[in-house]
Image (cartoon, rainbow, N blue to C red; front, side, top):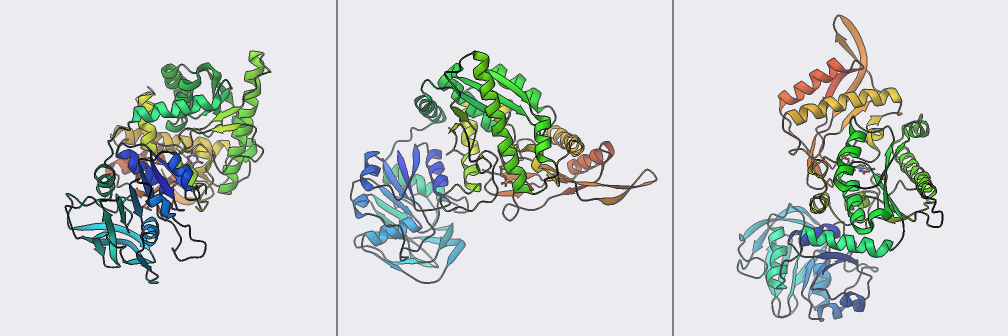
Length: 517
Ligand code: XMP
């Protein structure tokens, strides 16, 4: 594998994903892993990630010389670049100047290993305090930026390379090319990693972990849980039962779709649990978003526990209780729930931060290090139907976190109707693949005055939140055509009597998140 050594970066998994985009297998390992253990994984190349520390800080994670002398090609990024320079005898200066955001790199040699075939002037994305002021002896400096005299180094003989900027983010316009040049030209690797190889590897891992055990998979009908379910089904066959919890927070037609499309395509053993009243009761009177998320996460698990007991007793096989719970958790869910190294908890995704402490199951999350588009590729590989693979994301807590205010059966009905109309019109306009998703939000505690027919109304606003995104970590609001917006607005206010205003959310992420709660 190409190992990404994580120095506490927000971007370590993103780097691994970019490596996989270059068709090479990649894994992230913590910087605390001993050198011998790292080398025992027989890495084809090492990438040192960025990180929040200054190389001069007392507790700054170090880089052992031995890693640079093992004959494995190394590419340092940002903090990893500076740590590498220091270990090789160069100078990193504590400038106190911060260079943050977009800047331009001057490339000194456009035929070098890293920069071959690229322009001499390129936009790069920076985030650093210290700077390298002198390169180690015998190493070429191949780029500079206004804030960093030494912004890229290359040593073809020892196969050591590094850049001060972040090639993994899209703001670095030739970032992927720089990374690929390192992998293919610097480390001379042959691209061989494909979605089918990825699927096979994941299936094999699950098989090994579960052995002869029994598992259930919480199925929501969305892409992630469907792909996770199909993958585990492939690994352990009828040791798996899928459980679909109808929690009453679903959109119109969703429960039916799971039963029809997914079961038909995969032939999984499916149990449907009607838990609508249970969730409504648990959520009664609660309007705090984190509390809602925690309650929904907890009720999901309680329902799975009950279903697991029923499955076992139906089979008359009390000797073999269900040990594992399969979830379709993706990498972005993990990060945003505060699961990345040193990452802040933005919101508790129901399947990560919303889990109760006394969880009875061992979790299987085969997609935990993948991004949405990779999951889609794996899904196609496993024969999950296209209607499911290309579905837009829909959060596990469902409409529960799209009603701003307490959740009630009536409010759910209102939101379901408005959401159906928005989805119908977006589909009719052929926009489904252009937008990432379009949450429809009910401001249940807000009322405004309107006029309809000859009468005054005092109804609720609906918010449309169409967004474009690559991986849900960042997003922009989608510029939907006015006539589509007009159509949606007209239909919702006419057909849903409790709603008298439709508004458009024009906030990117950051500073907003995609969902309102
Ligand atoms: P935010 O609102 O954090 O959403 O910008 C990012 C993406 O994640 C989805 N989302 C969730 N998905 N469980 C999920 O399965 C959750 O608790 C959850 N919260 C948000 C959201 O729809 C968007 O695609």
